[in-house]
Amino acid sequence: MLRIGCHLSFSRGFLAMAGDAEKIGATTFQFFTRNPRGGAAKNWEQEDIQAMLDVFRRAGIAKPLAHAPYTLNACAKDGNIRRFARETMADDLKRLERIPDVMYNFHPGSHVGQGTEEGIRLIADTLNQVLWEEMHTTVLLETMAGKGSEVGRSFQELRAILDRVELSHKMGICLDTCHVWDGGYDIAGDLDGVLGEFDREIGLEKLKAVHLNDSMNPFGSHKDRHEKIGKGCIGLEAFRRIVNHPALRGLPFYLETPNELEGYQEEIAMLKGMAAG
Ligand code: FE
Ligand code: FE
Ligand code: ZN
Image (tube, rainbow, N blue to C red):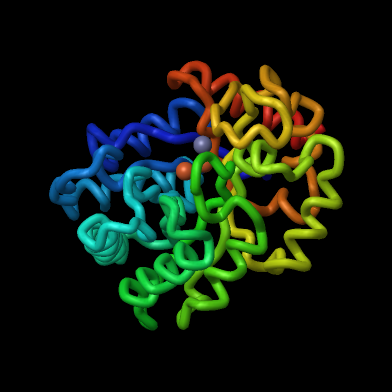
Protein backbone atom coordinates (compact mmCIF):
# COMPACT_ATOMS: atom_id res chain seq x y z
CA MET A 1 0.00 0.00 0.00
CA LEU A 2 1.24 3.42 -1.01
CA ARG A 3 2.08 5.50 2.07
CA ILE A 4 1.08 9.01 1.09
CA GLY A 5 0.15 12.26 2.76
CA CYS A 6 0.76 15.96 2.49
CA HIS A 7 2.07 18.97 4.29
CA LEU A 8 -0.35 19.95 7.10
CA SER A 9 -0.66 22.96 9.37
CA PHE A 10 0.71 22.42 12.87
CA SER A 11 -1.05 25.55 14.22
CA ARG A 12 -3.76 23.57 16.07
CA GLY A 13 -1.38 20.94 17.45
CA PHE A 14 -0.57 17.26 16.94
CA LEU A 15 -4.03 15.76 17.46
CA ALA A 16 -5.62 18.20 14.99
CA MET A 17 -2.97 17.30 12.39
CA ALA A 18 -3.59 13.59 12.79
CA GLY A 19 -7.34 14.28 12.52
CA ASP A 20 -6.80 16.24 9.29
CA ALA A 21 -4.68 13.42 7.88
CA GLU A 22 -7.31 10.80 8.72
CA LYS A 23 -10.07 12.97 7.22
CA ILE A 24 -8.35 13.23 3.82
CA GLY A 25 -7.25 9.61 3.59
CA ALA A 26 -3.58 10.30 4.28
CA THR A 27 -1.42 7.62 5.93
CA THR A 28 1.42 10.01 6.69
CA PHE A 29 2.02 13.79 6.73
CA GLN A 30 4.63 16.51 7.02
CA PHE A 31 4.60 19.55 9.31
CA PHE A 32 6.79 22.53 10.16
CA THR A 33 8.27 22.17 13.64
CA ARG A 34 7.63 25.89 14.17
CA ASN A 35 6.63 28.97 12.22
CA PRO A 36 8.70 28.68 9.00
CA ARG A 37 9.64 32.35 9.32
CA GLY A 38 11.50 31.37 12.48
CA GLY A 39 10.78 32.24 16.08
CA ALA A 40 10.25 30.23 19.22
CA ALA A 41 8.40 26.94 19.10
CA LYS A 42 5.39 26.39 21.32
CA ASN A 43 5.50 23.83 24.09
CA TRP A 44 4.68 20.34 22.90
CA GLU A 45 2.09 18.86 25.29
CA GLN A 46 2.60 15.19 26.06
CA GLU A 47 -1.19 14.65 26.09
CA ASP A 48 -1.46 16.08 22.59
CA ILE A 49 1.34 13.82 21.31
CA GLN A 50 -0.28 10.80 22.96
CA ALA A 51 -3.67 11.61 21.43
CA MET A 52 -1.99 11.88 18.01
CA LEU A 53 -0.39 8.45 18.44
CA ASP A 54 -3.83 6.98 19.24
CA VAL A 55 -5.14 8.33 15.92
CA PHE A 56 -2.03 6.90 14.19
CA ARG A 57 -2.93 3.41 15.44
CA ARG A 58 -6.59 3.72 14.51
CA ALA A 59 -6.01 5.24 11.05
CA GLY A 60 -2.82 3.42 10.03
CA ILE A 61 -0.81 6.65 9.96
CA ALA A 62 2.99 6.41 10.32
CA LYS A 63 6.27 8.09 9.41
CA PRO A 64 5.42 11.73 10.21
CA LEU A 65 8.02 14.03 8.68
CA ALA A 66 9.05 17.13 10.60
CA HIS A 67 10.36 19.93 8.39
CA ALA A 68 12.78 22.52 9.77
CA PRO A 69 11.93 26.18 9.07
CA TYR A 70 13.05 26.80 5.48
CA THR A 71 14.54 30.13 6.55
CA LEU A 72 17.37 28.40 8.46
CA ASN A 73 20.77 28.64 6.79
CA ALA A 74 23.36 26.30 8.26
CA CYS A 75 26.01 27.62 5.82
CA ALA A 76 25.37 31.35 6.05
CA LYS A 77 28.37 33.66 5.92
CA ASP A 78 27.19 35.40 9.11
CA GLY A 79 28.09 33.36 12.18
CA ASN A 80 24.98 34.54 14.04
CA ILE A 81 22.72 33.16 11.30
CA ARG A 82 24.60 29.84 11.41
CA ARG A 83 24.30 29.74 15.18
CA PHE A 84 20.54 30.36 14.95
CA ALA A 85 20.23 27.44 12.49
CA ARG A 86 22.28 25.18 14.76
CA GLU A 87 20.35 26.07 17.92
CA THR A 88 16.98 25.70 16.21
CA MET A 89 17.92 22.30 14.78
CA ALA A 90 19.31 21.13 18.12
CA ASP A 91 16.09 22.20 19.88
CA ASP A 92 13.89 20.54 17.22
CA LEU A 93 15.86 17.29 17.43
CA LYS A 94 15.62 17.20 21.20
CA ARG A 95 11.84 17.69 21.03
CA LEU A 96 11.42 15.06 18.30
CA GLU A 97 12.81 12.34 20.57
CA ARG A 98 9.29 12.26 22.06
CA ILE A 99 7.73 11.13 18.77
CA PRO A 100 8.39 7.55 17.64
CA ASP A 101 9.47 6.78 14.06
CA VAL A 102 9.77 10.41 13.00
CA MET A 103 12.18 11.93 10.47
CA TYR A 104 13.47 15.51 10.31
CA ASN A 105 14.00 17.17 6.93
CA PHE A 106 15.94 20.36 6.30
CA HIS A 107 17.20 22.47 3.41
CA PRO A 108 21.01 22.28 3.43
CA GLY A 109 21.34 26.05 2.97
CA SER A 110 22.71 28.74 0.65
CA HIS A 111 26.41 29.52 0.59
CA VAL A 112 25.77 33.18 -0.34
CA GLY A 113 28.94 33.64 -2.35
CA GLN A 114 31.36 31.72 -0.16
CA GLY A 115 31.43 28.88 -2.67
CA THR A 116 29.90 25.41 -2.67
CA GLU A 117 32.86 23.77 -0.95
CA GLU A 118 32.76 26.13 2.00
CA GLY A 119 28.97 25.71 2.14
CA ILE A 120 29.34 21.93 2.31
CA ARG A 121 31.94 22.25 5.05
CA LEU A 122 29.72 24.54 7.16
CA ILE A 123 26.61 22.36 6.76
CA ALA A 124 28.51 19.24 7.83
CA ASP A 125 30.00 21.20 10.71
CA THR A 126 26.49 22.15 11.89
CA LEU A 127 25.34 18.53 11.66
CA ASN A 128 28.38 17.35 13.58
CA GLN A 129 27.30 19.63 16.42
CA VAL A 130 23.61 18.66 16.59
CA LEU A 131 23.57 14.89 15.98
CA TRP A 132 24.23 12.40 18.76
CA GLU A 133 24.71 8.65 18.75
CA GLU A 134 21.65 7.70 20.82
CA MET A 135 19.11 9.85 18.94
CA HIS A 136 16.37 7.91 17.15
CA THR A 137 15.25 10.53 14.62
CA THR A 138 16.60 10.17 11.08
CA VAL A 139 17.77 13.54 9.71
CA LEU A 140 17.18 14.14 6.01
CA LEU A 141 18.91 16.49 3.59
CA GLU A 142 16.48 17.69 0.93
CA THR A 143 17.49 17.74 -2.75
CA MET A 144 17.38 21.38 -3.86
CA ALA A 145 16.46 23.13 -7.13
CA GLY A 146 19.67 25.15 -7.23
CA LYS A 147 17.97 28.53 -6.89
CA GLY A 148 20.54 31.24 -6.16
CA SER A 149 23.45 29.76 -4.21
CA GLU A 150 21.56 26.76 -2.78
CA VAL A 151 23.77 23.85 -1.76
CA GLY A 152 22.38 20.36 -2.44
CA ARG A 153 21.47 20.98 -6.09
CA SER A 154 23.26 17.80 -7.17
CA PHE A 155 23.61 14.29 -5.77
CA GLN A 156 27.38 14.90 -5.60
CA GLU A 157 26.91 17.89 -3.29
CA LEU A 158 24.62 15.92 -1.00
CA ARG A 159 27.08 13.04 -0.89
CA ALA A 160 29.90 15.45 -0.07
CA ILE A 161 27.92 16.66 2.96
CA LEU A 162 27.20 13.09 4.14
CA ASP A 163 30.88 12.19 3.67
CA ARG A 164 31.83 14.85 6.21
CA VAL A 165 29.21 13.94 8.83
CA GLU A 166 30.60 11.71 11.57
CA LEU A 167 27.22 10.18 12.43
CA SER A 168 26.09 9.87 8.80
CA HIS A 169 24.30 6.61 9.68
CA LYS A 170 21.73 8.89 11.39
CA MET A 171 21.07 10.61 8.05
CA GLY A 172 19.28 10.13 4.78
CA ILE A 173 17.97 12.03 1.76
CA CYS A 174 14.51 13.39 0.93
CA LEU A 175 14.07 13.58 -2.83
CA ASP A 176 11.82 16.47 -3.93
CA THR A 177 10.51 15.76 -7.43
CA CYS A 178 10.05 19.46 -8.31
CA HIS A 179 13.50 20.34 -7.02
CA VAL A 180 15.41 17.59 -8.85
CA TRP A 181 13.51 18.36 -12.08
CA ASP A 182 14.29 22.07 -11.76
CA GLY A 183 17.84 21.08 -10.78
CA GLY A 184 18.41 19.19 -14.04
CA TYR A 185 17.51 15.55 -13.32
CA ASP A 186 15.06 14.27 -15.93
CA ILE A 187 12.68 12.24 -13.76
CA ALA A 188 9.99 12.55 -16.45
CA GLY A 189 12.06 11.23 -19.36
CA ASP A 190 14.57 8.98 -17.62
CA LEU A 191 13.54 8.00 -14.10
CA ASP A 192 15.68 4.84 -14.17
CA GLY A 193 18.71 6.86 -15.22
CA VAL A 194 18.21 9.42 -12.44
CA LEU A 195 17.74 6.77 -9.76
CA GLY A 196 20.76 4.89 -11.12
CA GLU A 197 22.83 8.03 -10.73
CA PHE A 198 21.45 8.52 -7.21
CA ASP A 199 22.48 4.96 -6.40
CA ARG A 200 26.01 5.44 -7.74
CA GLU A 201 26.55 8.84 -6.08
CA ILE A 202 24.80 8.37 -2.72
CA GLY A 203 23.30 4.87 -2.54
CA LEU A 204 19.57 4.16 -2.76
CA GLU A 205 19.60 2.85 0.82
CA LYS A 206 20.01 6.51 1.88
CA LEU A 207 16.77 7.55 0.16
CA LYS A 208 14.17 7.76 2.95
CA ALA A 209 11.37 10.02 1.70
CA VAL A 210 9.92 11.65 -1.41
CA HIS A 211 8.36 15.12 -1.72
CA LEU A 212 5.81 14.74 -4.49
CA ASN A 213 5.38 18.00 -6.42
CA ASP A 214 4.88 18.89 -10.05
CA SER A 215 6.83 21.91 -11.30
CA MET A 216 5.57 25.17 -12.83
CA ASN A 217 8.83 25.46 -14.74
CA PRO A 218 10.66 23.56 -17.48
CA PHE A 219 13.46 21.07 -16.92
CA GLY A 220 16.62 22.55 -15.43
CA SER A 221 15.07 25.97 -14.68
CA HIS A 222 16.45 26.18 -11.09
CA LYS A 223 13.26 28.00 -10.03
CA ASP A 224 11.47 25.91 -7.34
CA ARG A 225 7.79 26.70 -7.92
CA HIS A 226 5.57 23.75 -6.99
CA GLU A 227 2.53 22.85 -9.11
CA LYS A 228 -0.41 20.48 -8.55
CA ILE A 229 0.26 16.87 -9.59
CA GLY A 230 -0.24 16.47 -13.36
CA LYS A 231 -0.77 20.21 -13.94
CA GLY A 232 2.89 21.13 -14.41
CA CYS A 233 5.92 20.39 -16.58
CA ILE A 234 6.69 16.97 -15.03
CA GLY A 235 3.26 15.60 -15.93
CA LEU A 236 0.91 12.90 -14.70
CA GLU A 237 2.52 9.89 -16.39
CA ALA A 238 5.83 10.62 -14.67
CA PHE A 239 4.08 10.51 -11.30
CA ARG A 240 2.48 7.19 -12.18
CA ARG A 241 5.97 5.79 -12.81
CA ILE A 242 7.38 7.43 -9.66
CA VAL A 243 4.85 5.94 -7.21
CA ASN A 244 5.19 2.51 -8.84
CA HIS A 245 8.99 2.41 -9.19
CA PRO A 246 10.48 -0.54 -7.27
CA ALA A 247 13.15 1.73 -5.72
CA LEU A 248 10.55 4.26 -4.51
CA ARG A 249 7.19 2.60 -3.88
CA GLY A 250 8.06 1.47 -0.35
CA LEU A 251 9.00 5.03 0.71
CA PRO A 252 6.65 7.57 2.28
CA PHE A 253 5.41 10.26 -0.15
CA TYR A 254 4.55 13.81 0.94
CA LEU A 255 2.65 16.27 -1.28
CA GLU A 256 3.69 19.92 -1.06
CA THR A 257 1.47 21.07 -3.89
CA PRO A 258 -0.50 24.36 -3.85
CA ASN A 259 -3.66 22.94 -2.28
CA GLU A 260 -6.07 23.22 0.63
CA LEU A 261 -7.21 20.02 2.38
CA GLU A 262 -9.84 19.15 -0.27
CA GLY A 263 -7.30 19.44 -3.08
CA TYR A 264 -4.86 17.25 -1.15
CA GLN A 265 -7.62 14.71 -0.55
CA GLU A 266 -8.21 14.49 -4.32
CA GLU A 267 -4.50 14.14 -5.14
CA ILE A 268 -4.05 11.44 -2.49
CA ALA A 269 -6.99 9.46 -3.88
CA MET A 270 -5.71 9.87 -7.43
CA LEU A 271 -2.17 8.72 -6.56
CA LYS A 272 -3.46 5.77 -4.52
CA GLY A 273 -5.48 4.78 -7.58
CA MET A 274 -2.44 5.06 -9.84
CA ALA A 275 -0.35 2.95 -7.45
CA ALA A 276 -3.00 0.25 -7.26
CA GLY A 277 -3.45 0.03 -11.03
FE1 FE B 1 11.49 21.58 1.83
FE1 FE C 1 10.22 19.81 -0.67
ZN1 ZN D 1 10.31 23.63 -3.07
